[in-house]
Length: 449
Image (cartoon, rainbow, N blue to C red):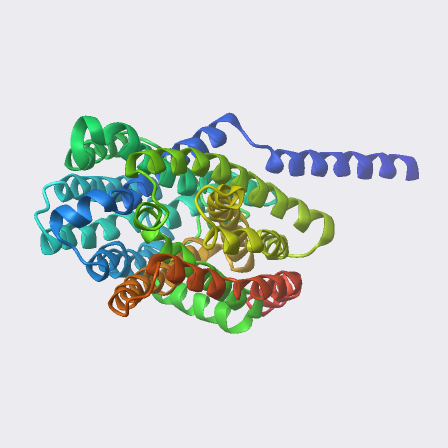
């Protein structure tokens, strides 16, 4: 009898293990969705960065000041992108996410094409506002989909791969400058990108929604969708009771000050480092792909490994990486353009962008309840874009114009160096957040039942 009971127990344990293994399995269609969403993220960032990449054409042709250019690449776009991102995240927690992404893609692509007809600041600012609304849909909805498709142990890597769209998209915008501007002109490139986005939106319309893990109950019934009020109150409780969540959000904002100011990189490279505008766009694009892809893989996979092996949060790994490359990032803004440290620094900028994505967005989703995953991404995007990048690029433009008026030598270099140093404050924030991760996660889950 005892032996039969033991055999039954062993059999049940084997079945349980098989069930767990099935839950951890990654299917081909999951990878297919990940790659398609990564493609959309790539298009998203080509679109977003095209204005910065064409700075050496658009600024003189439209007669823009550095402050006006900073507003166009900063608050004019980012205010709508960031504020609507929170709403779109909450919406993605309630409705069909694939259809929502298709709607956003059509909106931003149509307005990108319209931007190609701009005649001045005002006619470029208006479409940029609503491009921000369209683009705010993608990341909250996409990361929510990936969280439902991939097992938790691979969330960091999946988010990291999706995040490759960021540095590779930035590189893609520079390749557009280097290879397509001589053929189509800067206006034609805007028209072309808008058309490609509309075609991809039609394809996205036919992608099926993924069942939400948190909506399925034990008896197979679907739980009701949370109300906006429930989503908002859950988010408030999570932020109030999780110091590590607040530290991750604050660190992400601080780290992105330099990302905002980097909108002036192409102007800096031409005006103060003496590069040809087409040649440096091409070189930056290739180094962007090298550094960005490597950064996404290192950040996504490395963060997952650290979390599994040590029990510490992924931000600890990110803090160590940022500390190691900090001297290179500082030297990059000081040395001449023919120095090896300059080229290493240019690669390190994209490596940092890529490395950032997986650990940060996987961490914030791990720290909160399932029913606000898209909302917390929207909130994170709001903070990063509106305060970090928005303040970085707008303050950067004002600072450059002020330094020029004051007769300062190399105003772009000094501005970018200052914002690089400010961004280093994020390192201790990430380190402490990673140390507290498991404690805060357990406490929050216990508090919220």
